[in-house]
Length: 316
Ligand code: XMP
Image 1 (cartoon, rainbow, N blue to C red):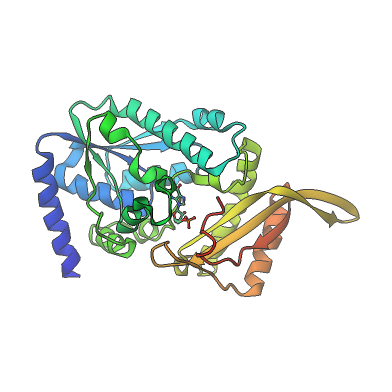
Image 2 (cartoon, rainbow, N blue to C red; image 1 turned 180 degrees about the vertical axis):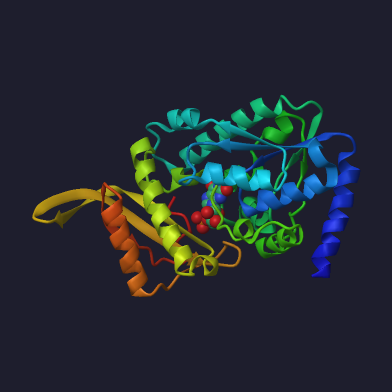
């Protein structure tokens, strides 16, 4: 695809001109957008790019290690920061989704700012903002807060940083194409989108460690089965949600009263509209059995058949 090839060489040239001799900082999530953006800028200015991966304790099972390995394998200059204690502490007792987002967003900025201060002559902040993010932040969804993490809040102004957003005009499939041309492995480019606030908005209500463990295990089983059965790449996003209710069941001749996991899987091209994925019943049955057998504390599994609109992709 020579069009995207041209885009890459033009952007690299442009980034070199804009940045000059200054340093650039970036907060990476391990997702497609920030990874491709960082590799592009790394091609342009080398180790004057400083990447930070902040672990907020709301990642999926094994995700921190996986992301760290991926990013290091790409040669990106990376610092990993474990701030999970701080995030979980601040989320204690908080139930409202927007309140959770606000706390996570602010804490993220605080931690990132502290780290970034160690970089001398940091004048630019790199962000993997896509066109749909620009549109959604402009208020089509009615709230700029939906994407707290995509525009690290007031950080650029506070630290007098200028923004570099090479993908502002692009859609995700175009960014994946660029990533492919830059030599990023398929497993990274095919990763489903994952929201900045992470599992905090997939535990409905208050977040605590015990529920995080339950959700991580259930989510891992679902994703593992999606990959094993060839569904993962046909789906835009799939995940488990932990509901704030208990439900009655029977195990042997004992009555149980345990938590409920909802499974969500959608097809979409840009996340702005979405349709629930039609799995074969046998697949859902298999995943349900594995989750209830293997994840202690879960007694019921349901599948979400809502489309967007009127529902959103996430539950919170
Ligand atoms: P919704 O749930 O609004 O999600 O249909 C659309 C896409 O955005 C992601 N999402 C978020 N991403 N911070 C993010 O960085 C957030 O607060 C947030 N909320 C939703 C969601 O996973 C989906 O891909």
